[in-house]
Length: 347
Image (cartoon, helix red, strand yellow):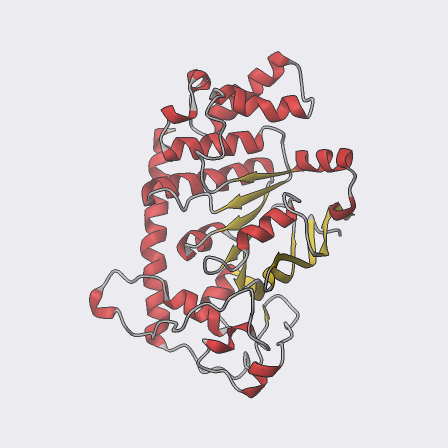
């Protein structure tokens, strides 16, 4: 069966006076229908650039992106427009992504007009249905973006992305600009809409508690490359790459008495203009050896893929580490569950 999305060795290098900035450097992954794949990693690791390459919002330096088996990197302008109907994006900043001169109703109907969907009356009816789906009212259609809160604007962005009935939605850190209670509402809304419409999500986020609640699989990125991919529960229970372990160790713990059990990741992120040879992570890795400094690790196959020379010989995490992760995740997820229950009662 064909993957909905297949990304093969995609790269984006930006020319510079001193060489090239390797923002994305050989990323490969697949996404199935109805699945949520999360991309996680530090700021600057290439997550958002990867998302834009997948949608051809920017052009690749090399590699292939296939959507429903079709290579979108070779599409003509007309075929590319048809592809855009099936693949939409929710941006990180909901205010910057909305035209301040368009009323909300006009912003939601605009994609339908561009793709020639329905009559004006049908587009208006669809717009009002979408506003209802995301928790807004039909009278909100006459207002401008500045008249809404951040959470409401993000709901408008979601409604606009769904207007053309896409199969794939790229969520580029859709909750990072929102406070925790609003994050819970938006994340639960996305999950409800996914179940209702059978959507596939490429979900980009920093917050691992959000990712654990949202994603079926997680791909961990470091300096333009994917270093580990696994099912969400498997990744949290058995992280095999030292960088993944460091990300999980960075989850804040609410109990001061239990902090400090895990040493935080040291060093600075290397420059993508001049990445280190071998494994890019070896300059910060406590387990690095000579082979790490000289040879690129090859990702293992299977459901839990990891690009590390010593993935099979790393020491166990330890009871203190496991408690650190699960306790932090439980507290965050409890907030999401409470918000979801309150929303269900209100509806």
